[in-house]
Length: 248
Image (cartoon, rainbow, N blue to C red):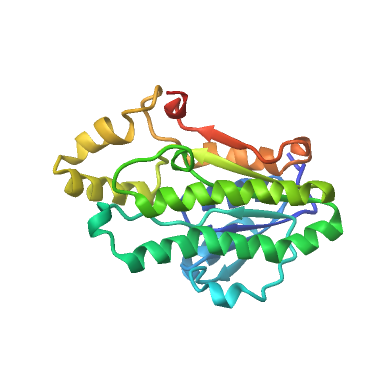
């Protein structure tokens, strides 16, 4: 498929996991992709693989993003981290860091990209949210707060971008088979005082009707559909890919 031929795309957190899968799929559809990540080696590796560009960037340094100008047709806000801890024990500096990375940075990247998109009369902003943008879980106060905020930012962007043919949507997966989730299994086991096998069965997949992790490539397929011309009337939406979790 070449429905994105001639388009440029930027994927944050693109060195691994969901981001890398999105970068590969966007490139396979014809887009020229910039892979943005703190991991400069990983970003360059993915970029070289797909014939794209690497951007080594610390998105938590939000001040450095304030005067940024982006010439990209497709923006995938994917970069994120997790921290599992009860609220009384949650380090305030960690809370602030996570909101900067997962709310303020997407805002600044959207802000930097919109003028180009408005000029071109085409733009696709795709925010990788989570089922936690719609539901809450214990011990994830910063992550749940950030994803709920990202959902709101995405909807406001959709309203402002609509007259300029710019769409903005969220993709809300459940637990995806990535390094972030693998690390989380150990954190959850320690926090809950249970074994790692119990974490997968009784916590990660407890609310899902389909009892398996989401694959990164499945998320990427939805992202690329939202990026394509066929999705021009899809905006302000949140697409769940959570195995039925949010159906409850």
